[in-house]
Image (cartoon, rainbow, N blue to C red; front, top):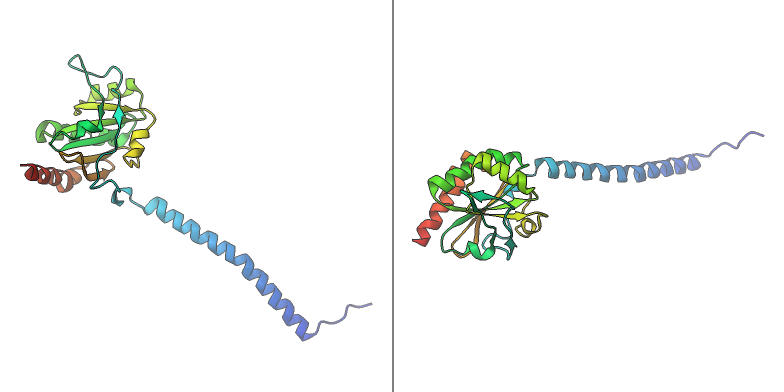
Length: 206
C-alpha cells in the first residue's frame, strides 16, 4: 500500500517545525560565538595598566613582611618592612618584583635611577620568589631598595590589588596611595607620569 500523499497544510506545518528546530539550534551557537568574541577582546585587547586601582586615595593595607633571607648590603642585612614604615612624612615608592620576571629586569635601571638620582626611597615586595634567586638578581643588577619584604605566597601582593609583577605604587608621607602603574616602568612612564607625580608630592610636602 502506498503512503498517503501529504496535503499542502501538512507540508507547511512540517516546514514550520523544521524552521523552528533550526532556529533553536542556531540560538545557542550565536550566544556561544558572542561569548568567545567578548572573551577574546577581554583577554587580548584589555590593558590592565589602564584599570583604576580601588586603593588610590586610600591608606596602604596593613601588613608585615619579613626580610629576604640572607640579603645583605655591605655586610649588613637588608630588613623587611611593614605598612608603618610607609608613613615617614616623605613620598616613597613600593615596587612589586621578582627575579623570574622579565619586565622587572627591563625596568630595573629606572628604579636605580629613581633611588640614586631622584633620591626617592624605594621599598620592594619580592613576590613568590626564592631567596637565593632574589639575592642573585639584586647582586647582579644593583639594589635600589631601602628594604625588601619577602612575599613568598603572594598574600600581601593580593591585598595591594596586584595584577602581576612588576607593579609600582607611589605613597605620600601619610601612607596614602597616590599613584599606581601596572607593568614595567618605561622612559615614557618615568618622564610623563612617575616623575611629575613625585615632584607634585614633594611640592605639597614643602
